[in-house]
Image (cartoon, rainbow over all chains, first blue to last red; front, side):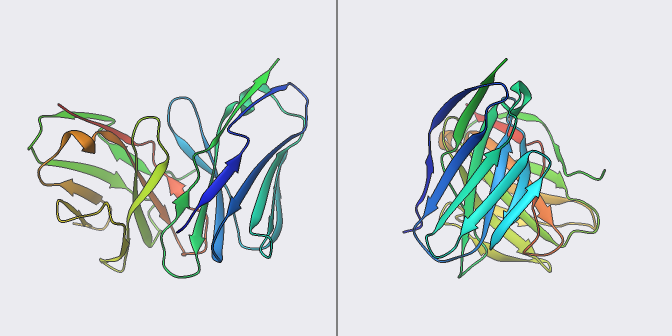
Length: 109
Length: 113
């Protein structure tokens, strides 16, 4: 079964705090996708990674393939970072992504 | 910056009616996807499409669903006979290579009455 677990489910942070969102999965994967969903529903892709670490601005994504775990970090968080962050994995076989339930982040000024 | 577009933004239909959701992927992309998100639930994969054929589909994508790329720009999702449980946000996405980041459209909210 392709389980994708995210933690925490909900997160409230003060502006400027360093934030970590975790994603664990149960099967071997070929790729992991971090996505951001805004309150209006729109989805923005943040990272697609299969190994190591990627950085874009204040966002950093890491993945440990052996431990089947990925983290998304936000440095110097800002209220505009408030959104739902979703992890999705593509198993080694197939082209389908399986999604986590998301982490709802609220950054308070 | 190029973007994926979807029309309509909101579609209301009666149960049993056919609906067609339209997407215009980014022009040089080769892989196309449909996802859905029922209100309050997680995003679910429906289907991927490459080289004018379905490359993978989920269990959700049954005979009531079909996809088509009728011309060089549009990518459509048809639901033949809508059910109440088809009410959801439907997202289209595309990328140029399978390993690349997928670019999502803004979604079509489908409401089946």
